[in-house]
Amino acid sequence: MTPTAAIYLDNAATTRLDPEVLEAMLPLMTEHFGNPSSIHSHGRAVRTAIEKARKTVAMLLNTSPAEIFFTSGGTEADNTAIRSTIETYRLTHAITSPLEHHAVLHTLQHLAQQGTIQLSLVDIDANGHIDLAHLEDLLRTRPRSLVSLMHGNNEIGNMLNLSRVGELCRAYDAIFHSDTVQTMGHFRHNLQQLPVDFIVGAGHKFHGPKGVGFLYTNAERVKIHPFVYGGAQERNMRGGTENVYGIVGLAKALEIAYRDMDAHQQHITGLKRRMIDQLRAKMPDVQFNGDSADVDNSLYTVLNVSLPASDMSDMLLFSLDIARISASGGSACSSGSSIGSHVLGALPGLDPDRGYVRFSFGKYNTTEEIDYAVDTLVGLYQKELVK
Ligand SMILES: Cc1ncc(COP(=O)(O)O)c(C=O)c1O
Image (cartoon, rainbow, N blue to C red; front, side, top):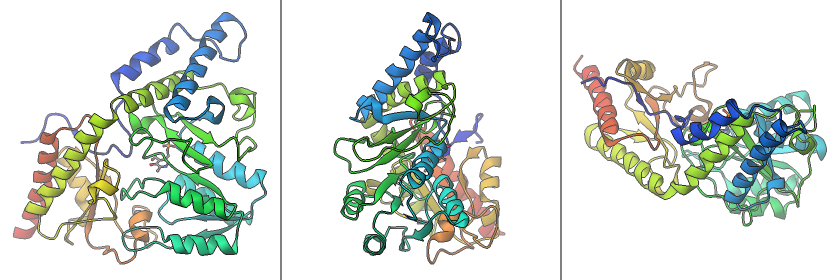
């Protein structure tokens, strides 16, 4: 039976706003409307709310509020770390992987095309694992590089050992930025112990508002120029009147995420296991990309499913949408197609004729939704086979 409301299994793209977060944001949209840069009481009340939010984020990540800068989202935080570091320290070489989000990859590729830097891509294996020996070779030939490698991959769920990569970067005097957008609010980050120079967060990936994020900068090791010039906001690091309700909402969302993390992790991991087990039982020749089916060693929120080659591979997401399931994915086609996933396209040996769907789970999903999604997928393929 088709559900009355569409089922949302695209939580890596964005998440539903938590009602507790909305409640925290509303006063900043109504009675507390002052400009936080104003020195009168209307402004001061709002300034206090921003600084309280900064303290909350810093406390949860075990760092100092002076190291947290609010931005317009994950993309701006990534751009700030990358562009401002390269500019401030006049770096001429950066290392990244072909599996990064476009917020990182396009930024670095642009700088390489401009001739500002040389860009090296670290080798990956068929499952999307970063070749750390190759990373060390690259660092040995070009020390004092910028290294940008993501913590959790938004498409295939692979996770990087931040401590190992961070130590390696320190050994070669490199600056290490990690795009932590997909792990922020889902895993705990202890910045007193983590050897990173920059990490980032985006409110909408953990049930907070869209259009707000933050950058952590390791104050002992890096001091970069602003990326957005303007007023003296964010201690001269990011000009522009702050997205006050967004900032307050982000901090509230992160607080809830940390408060409920263990329970949510258990619930969501259970949903992911259920989908893997059912697909294996009901769908011949189902496979999973990257590490996503290795439940204990991947993002518990992401499952990248690879389905047998058929005429409907290209229509999979459309067919799921008609059946009222919102998921994402894209084809593995990398021959210049605008719909091809650059992540799947970069995995060596992936069959472009198979069908690919990324299901990504959140705290509001239920076992019934998982069962419906599996049965729908199985039904679609059965129809295809009896044709
Ligand atoms: C890994 C990763 N990095 C960066 C971003 C960009 O974040 P935002 O949409 O907040 O700019 C996303 C969001 O899709 C992401 O998944």
